[in-house]
Image (cartoon, rainbow, N blue to C red):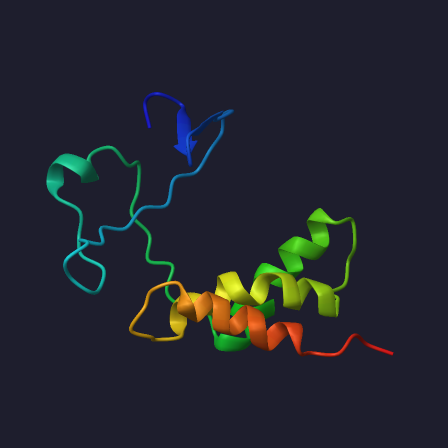
Length: 115
């Protein structure tokens, strides 16, 4: 964080002040969220508990952002169709990771366009 930049998929993005970092500790070999060690906690100004949003807010929270970034103040069917694989795919439990996203994408393709 002191570097004031993040790298996502090989692309480095500079962080302009102010910026917010939200972090959790999720070991790869375990499930759940765990407290950060003291050596990492001291990097943060404060600790807040955000909690988990209601199911309807979660589906709305991503579509509303996409609509806003598209210059609209309403959600379209296309917003839902575009985000469904990314929002829901990792929640479909299959023996092959990645199949959940493909399954959701296939289901969304079958949703007819609004009249």
